[in-house]
Image 1 (tube, rainbow, N blue to C red):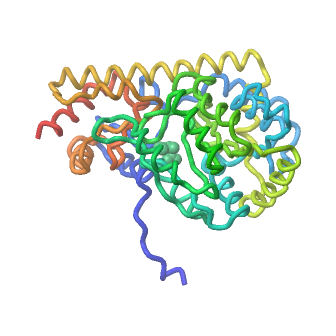
Image 2: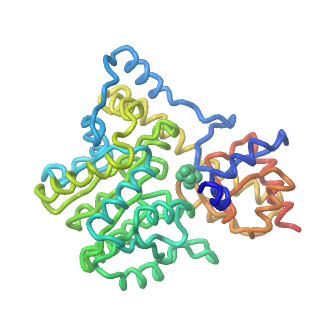
Image 3: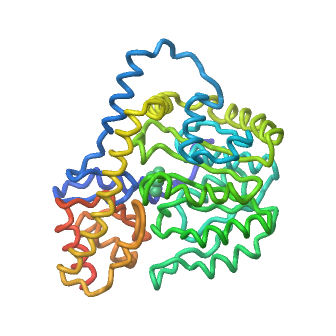
Amino acid sequence: MLSELQQRPPDPILGLSVKFKADDNPQKIDLGPGIYKDEHGNTPVLACVKAAEKHRLDTETSKTYISSAGSALFNQKIEQLNLAEHRVIEQNRVRTVSTPGGTGALRIAGELINTARAGTTIWVSNPTWANHQGVFTAAGLNVKTYPYYDYDNKCLDFEGMLAVLKQVPGSDAVLFHACCHNPSGMDLNAQQWQQIAELAKDIGFLPVIDMAYQGFGSGLDEDAYGLRLMADVVDEMIYCSSCSKNFGLYRERIGACSVIACDSEAADRVASVLMPTVRVNYSMPPAHGAAIVETILSSEELTLAWHSELAMMRDRISDMRQLLVEKLKQQGVTQDFGFITRQNGMFSFLGISPEQVQRLMDEYSVYIVGSSRINVAAVSSDNVEYLTRSIASVLNG
Ligand code: LMR
């Protein structure tokens, strides 16, 4: 049976890391997967995480099962982080399960929607994270796209987006990125969020918000603006959050799927479906990452330390956006890359051709996703010279 399986291509993002590891060029640069790196190319364990881990090591008394929903304290803390003092919490309308990363949250969200209405269509932005389509299809949903990024003008195609979303049936779901849009770095502004939220309310489609980068754009509250506004306006929605990037807990796999229902009875029914959905997938989420996050968020001192480490990462990414654009100019590149400084979070498209992407990899050992998405968080003052020289050579012939 298994010999009948057909070879599949490597993952468009994770596959790059395999190639990168095998490359022996000492100047190689990996701008593929969205992983934060410091000035020296390391992905550090945050000091607040180390402190929380030490605390857990000293105080943990059992490794027994917790629950399919994960730790209740983590779920409460993450809701507060995402929603702040939102009235939907007070109204007892939110139910959260912790999940294996943000991807696990998306899968649970997809399955929940599919249980409510089998084969629901979910609309995702064009472009979107390369894994969205696969995750939702695997959950049984039908995936369609709405316009989002204007590749020619390197900005948001809000008119195009709105025109298509106006036609979406009320029985469908629509996925939005809360902030730091992956892969384009183009986010909705406050007024655009308002229009989208009103549209969701009028038409009745289910908003699903992916918030994988809270704190990496403008700040923890600023990045949750759209999510909180949507929760103000609509009766029900789902959102998925992740602690991979903002807590640097990539391999611990900790995220959350939160559902806001129209009232507390409906929320209880949702929870009764969430639990068996988790049970048949992985029974229970891993606990270590959740324990770290709840320890940090339960301590004023560790929370402050986390805020400052997060701000450091965010500021470094924003500095690298400026530096990249300056250095490209200095290398004699005449195209305008200024748009990179107007985008948010880890990613931007360079806007170069697939052949140029391939040449960057083959000739210069610079690894970026085939769509020309770069992880700006992996640019540093150490590698920016070589990087921009390589891009300039590829652009100039
Ligand atoms: C990315 O988009 O690079 C990250 O979210 C990592 C991943 O899992 O794809």
